[in-house]
Image 1 (cartoon, one colour):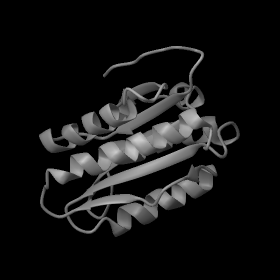
Image 2 (cartoon, one colour):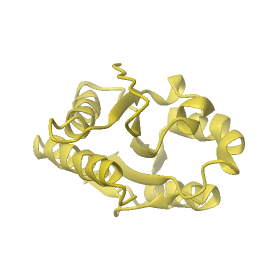
Image 3 (cartoon, one colour):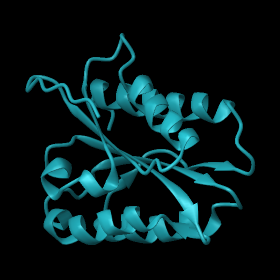
Length: 160
């Protein structure tokens, strides 16, 4: 994972559960999209298990990526929320957020569970959840890259 720190620009934290070759491609696409040469923000990419409350506290926006496991978010994504929920609850209300789900089935249960937690944290989901359904398609990487680029550009511009 790569991290660039410059205190004069805003920070986008990407927390991506990527247990497979294809989900690693999605995490990289998010990182690449947010690091578009015309966008000047710090981009931090971490796995859910490596993300701490301090990482969220230092972020100006968050991009979450998870897999759908048994019609629910990945266990490590749930663990991320379990560890970080209360330490950030009163401090990061309104945090701009985007979300993508790699769903072998339909992603509905995962989306609902994520929405419940995000609502409890009072974070601001700035785009509809991107659900990447069914068999793997290479276009999924472009969709995630575009999502990350849009979020990063909005953060840089102060829209979010």
